[in-house]
Every structure is written in structure tokens, then in C-alpha cells.
Length: 61
Image 1 (cartoon, one colour):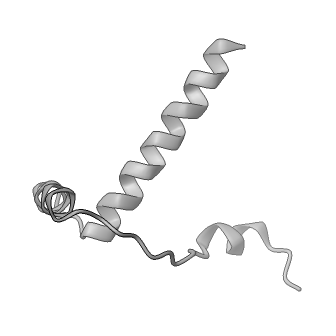
Image 2 (cartoon, helix red, strand yellow; image 1 turned 60 degrees about the vertical axis):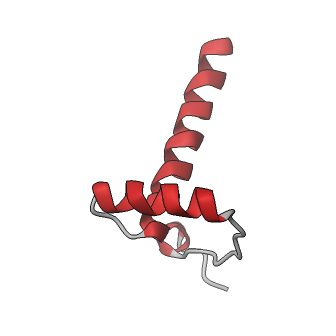
């Protein structure tokens, strides 16, 4: 078993994701405006949400 934390951070999980047509279109437009792929945009948005949540929980302590 490989215990290299850097390699674990580069490894990405694949997950199925179901979106409404409306949400898909909105995300696609946003991704194109930001010069990202749809997958890259979703990953960016999720990462920002997690960072925001971590920041918010640190303020509550």
C-alpha cells in the first residue's frame, strides 16, 4: 500500500452526478465564461464551498 500523501491529493475520485437541464445549462455557461470545462467548474465551485465552510466554522470557535 502506498502511503504517499502527495499522491493521494492528486488522485481524483469519479462520481456520477445528475443535474437538471437548467442547472447544467447555467453551469456550462458559467464554465465557458471562466474558460473552464464543466467538470473543472464544478470542482472549482465545490472547492470554494468547502473553503468557505471551513472558514465559517473557524470563526464560530
